[in-house]
Amino acid sequence: MQKFTGLCKPAALALLPLCGALSFMPATAQTPPPAAPVVKYDLTYDIISPVYAKNGMVATEQELATKVGVDILKKGGNAIDAGVAVGFALAVVLPNAGNIGGGGFMMIHDAKTGKNVALDFREMAPQRATRNMYLDDKGNVVPGRSLYTHLAVGVPGTVAGLTHALSKYGTMKLSQVIQPAIELAEKGYPVSPSLALILAAEREHLGQWDSSKAIFFKDGRPLQAGEMLVQKDLAKSMRLIAKQGAKAFYDGAIAKKIVAEMDKHGGLITADDLKNYKVVERVPVTGNYRGYEVMSMPPPSSGGVHIIQMMNILERYPLKQYGADSAQTIHLMAETMKLAYADRSEYLGDPDFTKVPVKGLTSRAYADELAKKINPDRATPSSEIKPGQPQPYESDQTTHFSVADKDGNLVATTYTLNLNFGSGIVATGTGITLNNEMDDFSAKPGVPNAFGLVGGDANAVGPYKRPLSSMSPTFVLKDGKPFLVTGSPGGSRIITTTLQEILNVIDHDMNVAEATITPRIHHQWAPDQLRVEKGLSADTIKILQDKGQKVSVQPSMGRTQTIQIKPDGFYGFSDPRNPDGRTIGF
Ligand code: GLY
Image (cartoon, rainbow, N blue to C red; front, side):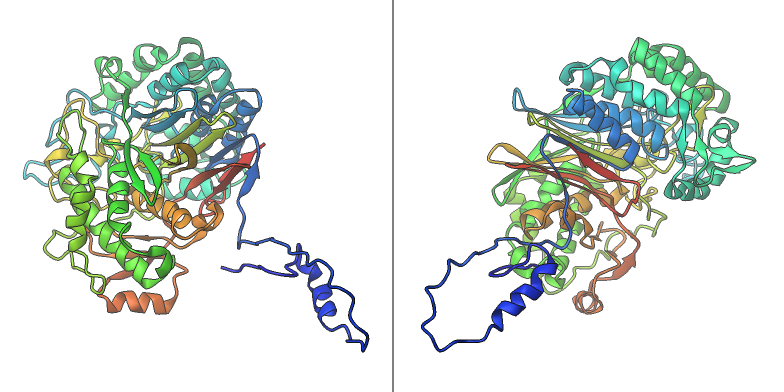
């Protein structure tokens, strides 16, 4: 990293000629006058700087949604008000991942009480869901059934989650925070080049359903960049929610339309399933890393457990000394990731149905045991493990946003439809795109899901069960005070992306912009493959290969939205891997 330090450091590079000129002044024979006090400029330039603001900050994957959140903060709303407004706005302006037909997790730090809450609004399997519902008569997984059919849809949790957060931790009325989303849906907005690319890629899935085509297609093809995306039905649904609250969605006009959609196409969700949907407030999973308190989402997410498990292992290595992009740091991270993801496949599932050994997985004693398996010089092959198929999981279909306000409240939310546009099915007459979160269950032990992840009994399909997730909205506290809010989309790579964002700040002294742009790596144990982003040097890759790592250079991984809280204000950064993302403060 390039830094300018010391005497005559320029406030701008334009000053450099002056420094040069001074050092070549001719000497005189006379006694020199007493030396003038030396002015030391203590300016340090980082390679890239985050956004700075004094009063509050919002980081999301879509500028229009970021603006909605910042407007709410400016009007006096707290981080939760802004977070809920952003959640509804993203359902309109990031329609491939933002949603009210999906589910997710929101971490909340309530400054007044100091309480940290992990809000679980993950989708639930319908009551009629069965363990083998994605298998054929021969016991083989039917391709696509858990992804692009009405059977793929879990009971959505987003509306219940956002309204719960607002009523318990917010200060504004639902009608106030949802209004900007209604207006964006009603008036429309121009499709960005990146959304146009996603729409084109999902043409086949969206094109199967008239209800989806009516919104996302024009003249028989997906909307293109610059064309307006207007969502009148979605605006109508949101207006109902604004008036009647979550009841409209779970036990009202919207519920009726969702059930009609299911009945018509062989889906399983019933009126009772919607009525029975429950938000759960869980206790965050916590750990300590080099003096920082880390807290993140507990099961049914695997994210928090494995971030802390990996930190417990990695803390014993001098990563700072090895360097951020060094082969040694990457090797140790990869070996650690393998161990964590191996445990994920065995032990993680919905804690309301399966005993998940969270304490053990996050204990330091267990980390000591696991660390003994790591050879710092050689990669341990995952050969005895059934390898996963390299799957088309190279895009980041979930979305994360972070909010921080001047009073110290924090919100970190990751929510999703699962894959881009979820099942591709819009429930007729609602404008609401339905998730395909059921694919996050393990359809059959050892058979990988869309993210190449394998699982077993703990994550088998079951009525009212929540599928295992990797979503990792995370806070880091220092001396009990907020320090970092972060998280990412990226399927199975969410956990490792979030881990690296934090390590880059804590271990490698990076600001959040640098921490974000640094090339990422990922290993998930099966398949036995170390994925690295473009940007890693050829000789680093060679050293990794010499250690036995099976390196595969991949397109970008993850898209973090991070805010760092310092005594002088907020420093945030939206991952440039998504050009539509924006961090704004005021
Ligand atoms: N659907 C991706 C996840 O929850 O991990």
